Length: 285
Image 1 (cartoon, rainbow, N blue to C red):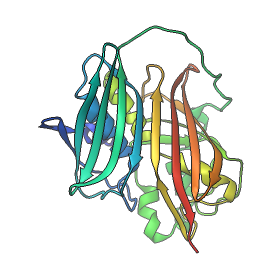
Image 2 (image 1 turned 90 degrees about the vertical axis):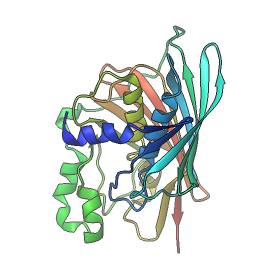
Image 3 (image 1 turned 180 degrees about the vertical axis):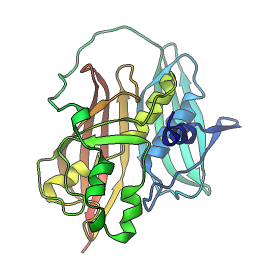
Image 4 (image 1 turned 60 degrees about the horizontal axis):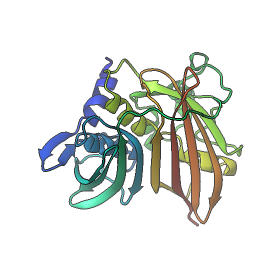
């Protein structure tokens, strides 16, 4: 396992404190605040530690306050219900006794049922695409010094955009994006871990979809950007050490908010998960 992958696995391995409380470390990815995907992944892992014989099939989270990437996070899990088939947990993430995220997670026993899905969209194979890191390297000399460390930092997720945009001078385009991603190395055969890493990775790039029609990006002056909520539905078994196609679109933006959706397919064309997120995209004057 590569060191960066080992670090991610350790990051998501929240430590039990007793009474359904867990402690998670934070990783500074160079963003002003803690990366939202980290809190999603750790929250999913914490709730999963209180359930046996059932896997998460959905997670609905609200980001309440920005988190500090240099401080740990406390996760309080509340056992809402354990039924014959489903279990529901609530998790509250806190820093310095202030809530930064709250989420509901539902778990289900393995079950057979009706099967259908959308067809996998057309996309080139990931092997022929350049990674985000390689693309950023090409414009390193143009990146402002205050953003260079964040954009050039090695990440545990290898992301390969299908139709990359210039991160410094984005041009208006259709409200849709595609990328392939996977962990940078093999992972243990733990379905809970793979779901947690998917939750972590699903927050990369999704928000930017709603900015694309407006020729805006994270470098646009005066633009205030933040994830407001995030929902994930897990449809089928999945692995994060093999490529997943992340097909994203943004059906609407209004009132300073952008709506983003994503569907994730494996190399066999199976739809393994769906994601939805609303984000703040406020233009300050």
